[in-house]
Structure formats: C-alpha cells, structure tokens
Length: 125
Image (cartoon, rainbow, N blue to C red; front, side, top):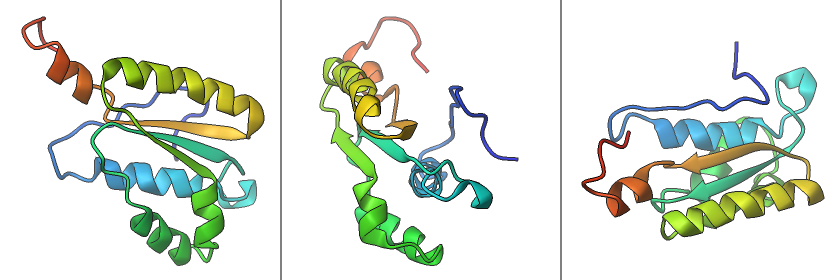
C-alpha cells in the first residue's frame, strides 16, 4: 500500500472531500522512520488557496507521538499568489531539495490559479 515514490500522484474530488487533510497527513508521514513507513525526509508544501493549517499538523504529529515543533520545521511552506509565482516556487523547491532531504512536494491546489487566470482557454481540470 501507500504512494509510489519518485512519481506524480494526483488527488482530486469535490470541495471538502478531504484532499487537503490527506496532504497534511502525507507531510507528517514522510518524516517517519523507514521502518514505520516513512522516508525520513522533509516536505515542501506549496499552498495556493491558503489552506495549510499548522494546528492540524500539530494534532497529526501528536497522534503519532512525534514532536510537533520538529515536524513543522521539516515542512517548508510557501504561499503561491498566482500561477507565475507557483511555477517559481516549484523551481525554488528543487533548489531546497539540494539543501534538505526533501522527499515530498505538495502543490495544493495545482490547478486553482490556472483555472482562475486562464478563463475561456478550454477546459482546465
């Protein structure tokens, strides 16, 4: 079970269906030791809709008996304000991966800015 590593995985569903909650949990779980299903790494979280909730990360970390402060330190969060900024942040994430053991890149939501900025250019997911 789980997610394939070194691959792109898309989560989709109706508003309020739990996609962001799954992303929060993945950002915590990627930090777990390998013998507990983790990758002993950091996460980069590009937030396009202002949905990242550190208080939720804290709850999830505590449920796994992890230090919430240390868990939050290993989640590098950036708020993307438009599609161009989002692309820039992905480039910056690649640079960050040279400095830290980044094992997970989350873009929540990948299409939100593009859908809003490119209205009338065909169907975007």
